Length: 357
Image: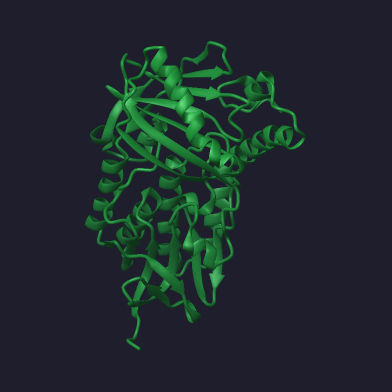
């Protein structure tokens, strides 16, 4: 058997978390191999593409991948009119360009970024078998490979609670500057959205896995309603979908044999269990994971533990609140009671009830 290639850091996944982790570690002088099973960065897009305005504080160059600015959130509960949250600034980005730009930045920082290559298995002593048959012996592994992370599975940290989503891209017939949210008892464990992108829009829906078979008819019904209202066209320009982790933060640092393994982004369960938002937490956790890896390799023995503490400090309170609100809604379905409009209000971030004790 060919001897494994020795490197400092192996990053698995080149989405926002992986690219940022690879950049941070490479900038700190580590030898970094970053891999992704996709053929190219950001393709296919499996994202509603909204990011909050605060992301601009973490990243430069967002203007180049922004499709539209957002100023408001409009929430529709059942058949009631929109409740407007006027101060909700953000952007709809082109996720393909966004991911590609972050991967290029990792390459410019010195990381060896390879696509169409995936982790097959972590063998004994932390040796990693890749899909091309090669072996790698990293000193540290960072798993950024999404909600069904192979790295997370290998270390016993898996996202077990997921929401299934389906999204279409449709013509947008009237200019719009808000993210539209549709809440209904008929959408168990999730919600529907309309996110404008200039003259087109992402129209999607997420539900609990038990309702996965309802995804298409529910989305079809919402699409037809918006067509009747003259807001969107009947043509479907693109399809996508995927899973979103909604179970909260996992253990983001585990030893595998004598190899430390960190998780970041969706692989660490950092996606908000109510909104499904995860891009900002992916960027921040990727930065932190890459820097923690470099610090540990340079002799800081507590850097990896401090990484998990920082994740809990930054994201724990918001994730915990969202988990409580999500659980309150799901418990009503489990007792054969559909959530009322008041319960749906309490379960959504636009309303003061959500933030109450």
